[in-house]
Image (cartoon, rainbow, N blue to C red; front, side, top):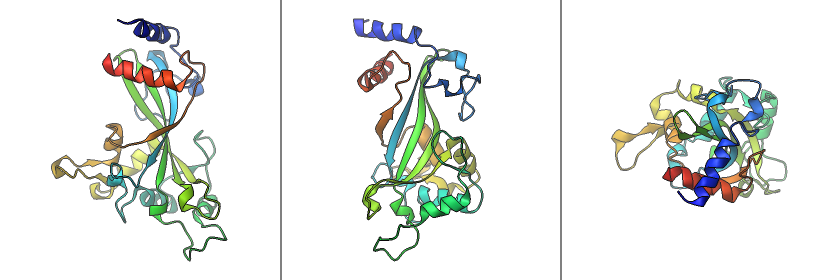
Length: 237
């Protein structure tokens, strides 16, 4: 094993409980987790934010016209079936009045429509914990929340990103599981027999994304470059 890999092993042993996962240190489990891992079994943890551009070819299975994931989320909130939050801390619930206001197009926009189209809400910001489970010796991607965003290019006259709402991923999965498969289908163009629902596709990391932020916390690996190196090392482990 190289000196570099020895360094990562030492980092693992000296960083068994990190503040990036320790937002919920008062609990044994992260209450927002889909598949919670006991904190005592987490050898390494880091929080990351990823932007998923829905209007790309790889992500198009969840952005099919009239069946966009953005449309499904908005309709769920309007129907009172999904709770929106103010931000990714998931501590403050957004009331319906504020949610509907966030959907409104600002004065000064030349468009005749009142609300953003689902196709204009074309970015999902995914917040997740990347964990190393020392029991299974596996790296785990634990999605905590998703944020629905209108990117700046779709938001004149300011051309700044506009956040509609944040959703607890645990709630989103529960809601998607109540819908017909056709409404949440990640289509496989090569083999229709291998079509998946959106949550399975996310679990299998079939989407493309860009890391926009990494929570440094108190980790010894305190740079994004080290974080990328760690992921590469784990893939070879």
